[in-house]
Amino acid sequence: MSKAAAKAFITALAEANPDAESELIFRNTFELLVSVVLSAQATDKSVNKATKGLFEHAPDPKSMAELGEAGIAQYIKTIGLWRAKAHNVALLCEQLLERHAGEVPADRKSLEALAGVGRKTANVVMNVAFGADTMAVDTHIFRIGNRTGLAPGKTTRQVEDGLVARIPKDMLRPAHHWLILHGRYVCKARAPECWRCPATQWCLYPDKRLTPPRTKEAA
DNA sequence: AACTCGGGGCA
DNA sequence: TGCCCAGAGTT
Image (cartoon, rainbow, N blue to C red; front, top):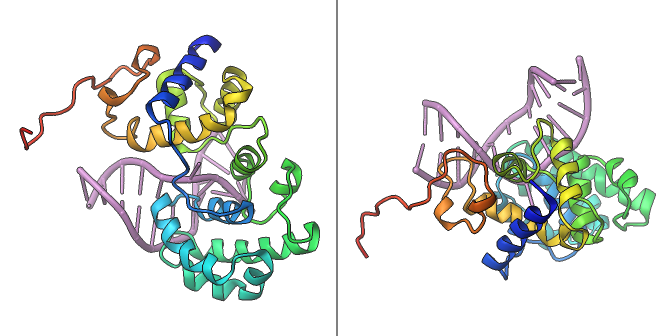
């Protein structure tokens, strides 16, 4: 997809969801970081349910470090990989205190050195919290990139580079939210609802469903 | 690059 | 039941 088409694509998504915001609930950069670490292979809804009590009880790195691995685990047992995640989050909080005075660092190298933080989470934090020119590739964005031709690639890194290369810099941050929400509700893994998509004119997906299935209630 | 971890949500 | 989920760490 050309850069011009990419810009039109993102703009169309923006106009379709003018008030789109993250589905993850967080009040600051620390909560964003922890939320995304917990999100690996889990749905946003289940993460929100788990972090509600966790953040209430431990709203900052210091209190969460004091809560400890076992204490954290008791709040997040409802999501997958909770053992490893509780271990990582406890360690992550200690690392924030020791290395960064309890603050979330703003650079990729420091972020990726934290427990449970890989390239994807680092990109989210840099994009959302610090406005950096990065794009995080999750399963939704990977799917959209390939399906539409916006950013094709076999690896997440290829998709990431394609996105950053094609999307205008000043649209990278909102594009992150718009693409994820688009993948969640419209360009879904199964049964995509193309009739609700504002960008089908640029899309390469061969099995587009341009008309909604017949509903039981004939409104 | 491929594999493993792992529980909940949803059709 | 089978597929999917705002991935990271190891081999």
